Amino acid sequence: MRQVSTALILATGALCACGGTTTHFTQTNLSPVPMHARDPASVQVFMASRPQRPFVEVGIVEAQQSSRYSRDDMRRVVWALREEAARRGCDGLIIVGNNNAVVGGTYKGYGGTSTLKGYRGACIMYKPAWRPAPALRAQPAVAPAAPPANPPEVTPPADDTAAPPANPPEVTPPADDPAAPPADDTAAPPTDDTAAPPAD
Image (tube, rainbow, N blue to C red):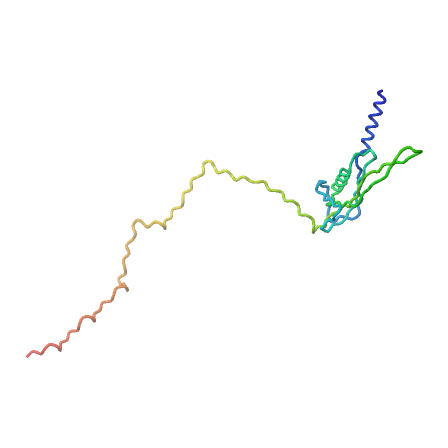
Protein backbone atom coordinates (compact mmCIF):
# COMPACT_ATOMS: atom_id res chain seq x y z
CA MET A 1 0.00 0.00 0.00
CA ARG A 2 2.87 2.33 0.82
CA GLN A 3 4.49 1.63 -2.54
CA VAL A 4 1.26 2.49 -4.36
CA SER A 5 0.97 5.78 -2.47
CA THR A 6 4.56 6.69 -3.29
CA ALA A 7 4.03 5.93 -6.96
CA LEU A 8 0.86 8.05 -7.00
CA ILE A 9 2.69 10.99 -5.42
CA LEU A 10 5.53 10.75 -7.94
CA ALA A 11 3.08 10.60 -10.86
CA THR A 12 1.22 13.63 -9.56
CA GLY A 13 4.48 15.54 -9.21
CA ALA A 14 5.44 14.61 -12.76
CA LEU A 15 2.14 15.92 -14.08
CA CYS A 16 2.61 19.21 -12.22
CA ALA A 17 6.16 19.54 -13.51
CA CYS A 18 4.99 19.03 -17.08
CA GLY A 19 2.29 21.69 -16.78
CA GLY A 20 2.58 25.43 -17.38
CA THR A 21 3.78 27.42 -20.36
CA THR A 22 7.15 27.54 -22.09
CA THR A 23 8.46 30.73 -23.74
CA HIS A 24 11.23 31.47 -26.24
CA PHE A 25 12.78 34.62 -27.69
CA THR A 26 14.64 34.97 -30.99
CA GLN A 27 16.34 38.27 -31.90
CA THR A 28 15.77 39.56 -35.44
CA ASN A 29 17.08 43.16 -35.49
CA LEU A 30 19.13 45.51 -33.37
CA SER A 31 17.16 47.77 -31.08
CA PRO A 32 17.35 51.53 -31.77
CA VAL A 33 17.62 52.14 -28.00
CA PRO A 34 18.94 50.11 -25.06
CA MET A 35 16.52 47.45 -23.81
CA HIS A 36 15.87 46.87 -20.10
CA ALA A 37 13.54 44.55 -18.24
CA ARG A 38 10.24 46.15 -17.29
CA ASP A 39 6.86 45.51 -15.72
CA PRO A 40 4.75 43.15 -17.92
CA ALA A 41 1.76 45.49 -17.51
CA SER A 42 3.73 48.27 -19.29
CA VAL A 43 4.16 46.20 -22.48
CA GLN A 44 1.55 47.27 -25.05
CA VAL A 45 -0.18 44.33 -26.77
CA PHE A 46 -1.58 44.62 -30.32
CA MET A 47 -3.63 42.05 -32.22
CA ALA A 48 -6.07 43.51 -34.76
CA SER A 49 -4.31 46.90 -34.98
CA ARG A 50 -0.76 48.18 -35.29
CA PRO A 51 1.05 50.98 -33.42
CA GLN A 52 0.67 54.47 -34.88
CA ARG A 53 4.26 55.38 -34.01
CA PRO A 54 7.35 54.27 -35.96
CA PHE A 55 8.94 51.15 -34.47
CA VAL A 56 11.56 48.49 -35.12
CA GLU A 57 10.87 44.78 -34.82
CA VAL A 58 13.70 43.41 -32.73
CA GLY A 59 12.61 39.83 -32.04
CA ILE A 60 10.05 37.02 -32.11
CA VAL A 61 8.46 35.89 -28.84
CA GLU A 62 6.81 32.46 -28.60
CA ALA A 63 4.73 30.90 -25.84
CA GLN A 64 3.26 27.41 -25.76
CA GLN A 65 1.76 24.97 -23.28
CA SER A 66 4.56 22.84 -21.90
CA SER A 67 2.73 19.53 -22.28
CA ARG A 68 -0.65 17.93 -22.77
CA TYR A 69 -1.13 18.11 -19.02
CA SER A 70 -0.89 21.88 -18.90
CA ARG A 71 -3.96 23.61 -17.55
CA ASP A 72 -2.98 27.07 -18.81
CA ASP A 73 -5.74 28.57 -20.92
CA MET A 74 -5.42 31.17 -23.69
CA ARG A 75 -5.36 34.05 -21.19
CA ARG A 76 -2.48 32.51 -19.23
CA VAL A 77 -0.50 31.70 -22.39
CA VAL A 78 -0.86 35.27 -23.66
CA TRP A 79 0.25 36.59 -20.27
CA ALA A 80 3.32 34.33 -20.38
CA LEU A 81 4.06 35.79 -23.83
CA ARG A 82 3.80 39.28 -22.34
CA GLU A 83 6.05 38.36 -19.42
CA GLU A 84 8.75 37.13 -21.80
CA ALA A 85 8.49 40.37 -23.81
CA ALA A 86 8.84 42.40 -20.61
CA ARG A 87 11.84 40.36 -19.53
CA ARG A 88 13.51 41.20 -22.84
CA GLY A 89 12.60 44.91 -22.54
CA CYS A 90 10.11 45.22 -25.41
CA ASP A 91 8.02 48.39 -25.71
CA GLY A 92 5.19 46.50 -27.38
CA LEU A 93 4.10 43.07 -28.54
CA ILE A 94 2.26 42.40 -31.81
CA ILE A 95 0.60 38.97 -31.71
CA VAL A 96 0.88 37.62 -35.25
CA GLY A 97 -0.73 34.19 -34.89
CA ASN A 98 -0.94 30.93 -32.98
CA ASN A 99 1.94 28.63 -32.15
CA ASN A 100 0.08 25.37 -31.72
CA ALA A 101 1.74 21.97 -31.86
CA VAL A 102 0.24 18.48 -32.12
CA VAL A 103 1.91 15.90 -29.89
CA GLY A 104 1.36 12.22 -29.18
CA GLY A 105 0.42 9.35 -31.48
CA THR A 106 -1.21 5.93 -31.67
CA TYR A 107 0.22 2.45 -31.81
CA LYS A 108 -1.99 -0.55 -32.59
CA GLY A 109 -5.04 1.42 -31.71
CA TYR A 110 -3.68 2.72 -28.43
CA GLY A 111 -2.65 6.21 -27.50
CA GLY A 112 -3.82 9.49 -28.88
CA THR A 113 -2.82 13.01 -29.83
CA SER A 114 -3.32 16.39 -28.24
CA THR A 115 -2.76 19.98 -29.31
CA LEU A 116 -0.51 22.28 -27.31
CA LYS A 117 -1.92 25.80 -27.46
CA GLY A 118 0.48 28.62 -28.10
CA TYR A 119 0.95 32.07 -29.63
CA ARG A 120 3.69 33.97 -31.43
CA GLY A 121 4.33 37.72 -31.36
CA ALA A 122 6.75 40.37 -32.57
CA CYS A 123 8.74 42.30 -30.00
CA ILE A 124 8.91 45.96 -31.06
CA MET A 125 10.84 49.02 -29.88
CA TYR A 126 9.73 52.56 -30.63
CA LYS A 127 12.18 54.87 -32.37
CA PRO A 128 13.82 57.51 -30.13
CA ALA A 129 11.92 60.52 -31.53
CA TRP A 130 8.58 58.82 -30.86
CA ARG A 131 9.21 57.27 -27.47
CA PRO A 132 6.77 58.26 -24.69
CA ALA A 133 8.12 60.75 -22.19
CA PRO A 134 8.92 59.27 -18.78
CA ALA A 135 6.46 59.97 -16.06
CA LEU A 136 7.48 62.76 -13.70
CA ARG A 137 7.72 61.90 -10.06
CA ALA A 138 5.67 64.09 -7.76
CA GLN A 139 7.86 66.16 -5.50
CA PRO A 140 7.07 65.79 -1.77
CA ALA A 141 5.32 68.77 -0.27
CA VAL A 142 7.54 70.84 2.00
CA ALA A 143 5.79 72.18 5.08
CA PRO A 144 6.44 75.87 5.78
CA ALA A 145 8.83 76.60 8.61
CA ALA A 146 7.16 77.31 11.95
CA PRO A 147 7.63 80.85 13.30
CA PRO A 148 9.96 81.22 16.32
CA ALA A 149 8.42 81.05 19.78
CA ASN A 150 9.65 84.54 20.75
CA PRO A 151 10.12 86.60 17.60
CA PRO A 152 12.35 89.66 18.11
CA GLU A 153 10.66 93.05 18.05
CA VAL A 154 11.44 95.14 15.02
CA THR A 155 11.68 98.91 15.65
CA PRO A 156 11.07 100.99 12.55
CA PRO A 157 13.83 103.52 11.75
CA ALA A 158 13.21 107.13 12.81
CA ASP A 159 12.15 109.34 9.93
CA ASP A 160 13.68 112.76 10.68
CA THR A 161 12.39 114.26 7.44
CA ALA A 162 8.76 113.72 8.39
CA ALA A 163 8.76 115.71 11.68
CA PRO A 164 9.45 119.51 11.63
CA PRO A 165 12.37 120.82 13.75
CA ALA A 166 11.57 121.89 17.29
CA ASN A 167 13.04 125.47 16.91
CA PRO A 168 13.04 126.50 13.26
CA PRO A 169 15.59 129.25 12.49
CA GLU A 170 14.26 132.69 11.62
CA VAL A 171 14.75 133.72 8.04
CA THR A 172 15.90 137.36 7.61
CA PRO A 173 15.31 138.82 4.15
CA PRO A 174 18.35 140.38 2.48
CA ALA A 175 18.88 144.17 2.56
CA ASP A 176 18.35 144.59 -1.12
CA ASP A 177 15.04 142.93 -1.54
CA PRO A 178 14.09 142.97 -5.21
CA ALA A 179 10.50 142.30 -4.23
CA ALA A 180 10.13 145.70 -2.44
CA PRO A 181 8.93 148.53 -4.74
CA PRO A 182 11.60 151.17 -5.47
CA ALA A 183 11.26 154.60 -4.01
CA ASP A 184 9.59 156.98 -6.52
CA ASP A 185 11.20 160.38 -6.13
CA THR A 186 9.45 161.66 -9.25
CA ALA A 187 6.08 161.51 -7.57
CA ALA A 188 6.78 164.73 -5.59
CA PRO A 189 6.15 167.92 -7.71
CA PRO A 190 9.24 169.97 -8.40
CA THR A 191 9.66 173.39 -6.78
CA ASP A 192 8.83 176.13 -9.31
CA ASP A 193 10.56 179.35 -8.32
CA THR A 194 9.10 181.11 -11.34
CA ALA A 195 5.59 180.78 -10.02
CA ALA A 196 6.22 183.22 -7.11
CA PRO A 197 5.74 186.89 -8.02
CA PRO A 198 8.80 189.08 -7.77
CA ALA A 199 9.14 191.34 -4.78
CA ASP A 200 8.29 194.98 -5.43
